[in-house]
Figure (cartoon, rainbow, N blue to C red):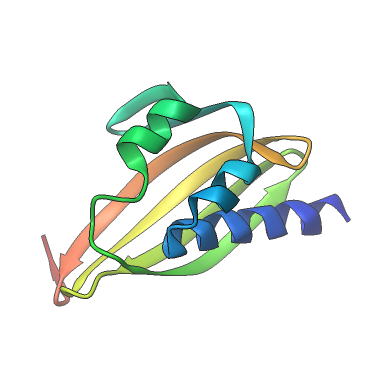
Length: 118
């Protein structure tokens, strides 16, 4: 049952990012949330929203390809596409504190422009 709840949290988080609904995203993140990516080293919640919200790319569509939840951890892989024809796939490793996201580690995938690797 917990797996279903955490899967729903991951879907809501990804949906909030796509629709740029910061209020929903904030409600899903733990107070001591940290974010790590190839560009960020364990930044706190305030810095995450300052640097990463919303993404610097133009509005994009995000399709979840896979969510795997085990205990209080999850992986989500998604594919994004922008109106300009750019596509990319990322994977995020999330940890939870109860039903709130405690940390996100993002792994960037390859990017394509109109089907060509860039």
